[in-house]
Length: 247
Image (cartoon, rainbow, N blue to C red; front, top):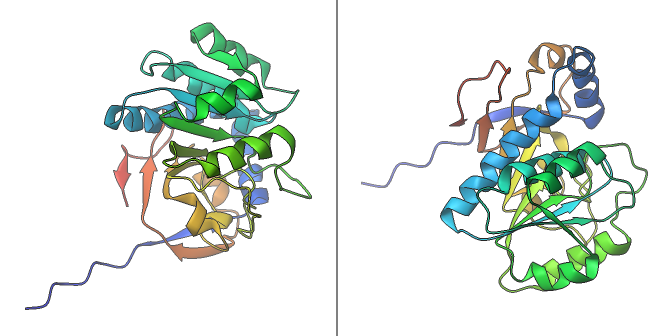
């Protein structure tokens, strides 16, 4: 008897970055701590990576909310990682998140120090760019140099992308060569369209979607597309989702 075929992945609605930002506004206006919820879910995913392979975490943090998510997650990871190092790839940074990370024990490292640390890191947390409006999403300067350094490593550390792999367009899935292929992407609020089209499927790895309670607002938005994807849904405190499960 032939083996039964694996069931086709479920189709999920994927949204544009504009639609997700619009859905976040009422929640933020109501004072819901979306960033802290997102960071806690992100830290849970990295904890699982460290449980499978203990070691250190290197956080690449950009200037926007994506960097803030990564830094708050870094604070939660300090008790379980051998070491948490942070590289700030921009002069601007989410100050409260950085203070939380350093108060918990994370160490800020220079770009030159990071070159040596990369080969000694178990997990790299890619929090350089998120879904903010950018005319050109190509990485530049120290961020690009660090990404190209990781791409040259063999073997590479496990890569966990924060919301989307940095440099991937969240809407059309386009990207240039300097993008880290993630082993896991932890995306917040809803599935981004760029994760399921263009280069997204090849770069995103296993996708975890963190429920932030945006569903009431997202019902008013039209999905950019629906796509078959095998993903993990995660709940957060205050969200309406059930416990973490595979879809």
